[in-house]
Image (tube, rainbow, N blue to C red; front, side, top):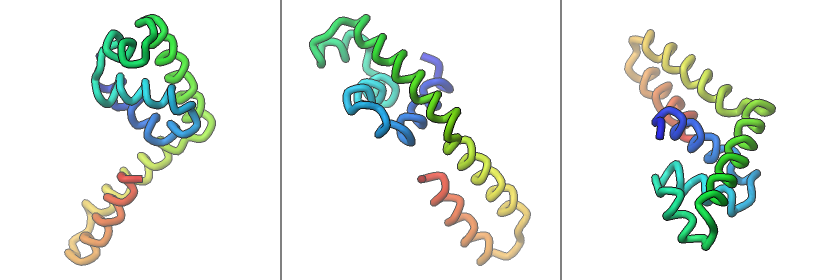
Length: 109
């Protein structure tokens, strides 16, 4: 599994997973976050591997549609990048510490 895609889908599920059914969000999490195979997930839920794959494909599509419409992940990523850029140009230790705290909070959202 491609690491970049795994991180992307995992992040999208973190932000938009509550918009999916609990079942869909759990399967996405098991596959991308816990790195379980299709067979392991299928056994856990008593469905076929193809059934698991179908849920993953549909759920990925929904998560990407939510991001396309709402753009929360992209906005927060841009904001964090701008804050990091600003922090790297600061020489005052106290202000830099405060800004670093804000950056950490934004990244945790």
